[in-house]
Length: 112
Image 1 (cartoon, rainbow, N blue to C red):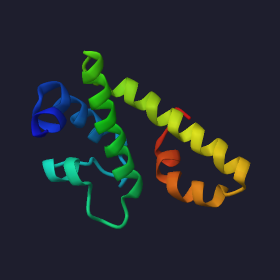
Image 2 (cartoon, rainbow, N blue to C red):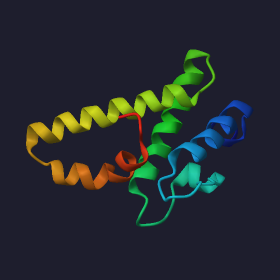
Image 3 (cartoon, helix red, strand yellow):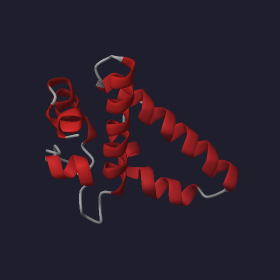
């Protein structure tokens, strides 16, 4: 588990690229093994922990397909999740919760 999700060369690369990309807290995030396996134990990082879970899922599915995980594919996963959740909240008229949850991503993303 440590090797697959953290120590493997290609996995370590995606975590490094992810830390430069996310900029959720306004600074580069340096993830430890504990952060990757358990999440960050802070009340302000719900979206970051969600992204960490998505990266781990991307690592797992990439390995099952025999390809290296990459940040470009991960970004597409995040965009799809964002659009799907946005559609659901618009349909259910709960946009305030959506904006609160995704605000940091919306602010930091030029690609939406």
